[in-house]
Length: 103
Image (cartoon, rainbow, N blue to C red; front, side, top):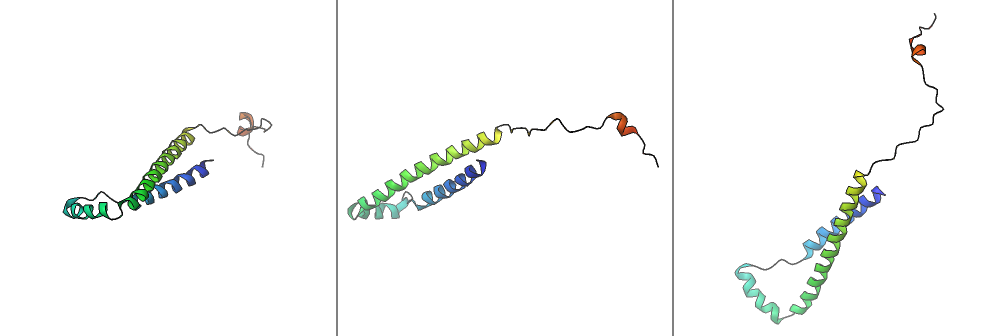
């Protein structure tokens, strides 16, 4: 169970990183102002669909990452079950331990 959660957590973290890196940044500065006008004229709608899809994927990956994080925290803090020890084992008494073997 814990190993499965760890593997899922790693997969979701890599997907989240990849999706965030694939998104285009907000264009700032003078070059963004000049290029921004041409984007509204030539094919801004095509980019909007990809950007919208990447935003949705980012939200889904972030939610799954948080869910696996909380699940891993719960599993890590859960008390472990104690192993069952049978009572049929013979224990050494204090008198037996103090006896000196005859030579």
